[in-house]
Image (cartoon, rainbow, N blue to C red; front, side, top):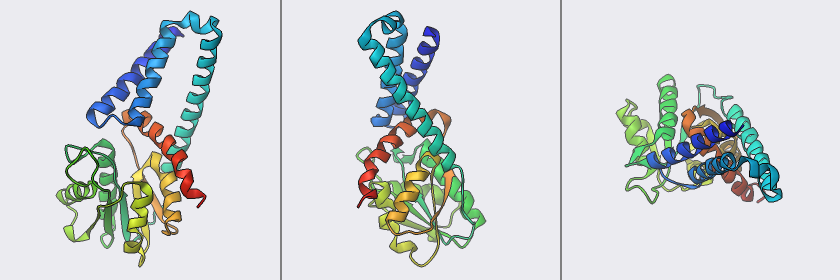
Length: 240
């Protein structure tokens, strides 16, 4: 058991650090690193965690939290891959994610590649790329996304930019008027679909369909950790 804890702890810690290094060290990355460090400490002081009352309590609390996190992650990812698009929508809303050196990161690339594939099969649809500029970039997410799609062969005339959204709620709120005359499908990562569908409905984009882009496996722990916290924070919108 001690060896298993050590391997899991080392894997999580390295995963969080790698995602932070290749992206940005945000709360999701820090949580995964912290989980990994806790498991490494548990492995190092395995006997103490069995005999000391306080450490037994910490072990139990951590195990319960991890069980909830794993169950939630599996559920949202399973929901996220249940695509319901019709291939006849008029607008594709692609939700932004963090950039690296003004270029789409791994997570955002999967969203854009998924959207491009849809657009190739639905030539009449226009695409709205949504996302503002974060503190680590000199370019908005929307502009970087547009550049990526155009470089990949999507006609510039089909690409609409929404460059002021700092959240999922604002992604949809700021895109609402643009899609009012047609049907919309949104593209985001599979772990993000559930909350996005709720936000689309709250913002008045009714009956929006969705396509869940597959996240690189090594990014999933960090992304799901961040998504769990974001879902808790989003409850303020649900009860307005």
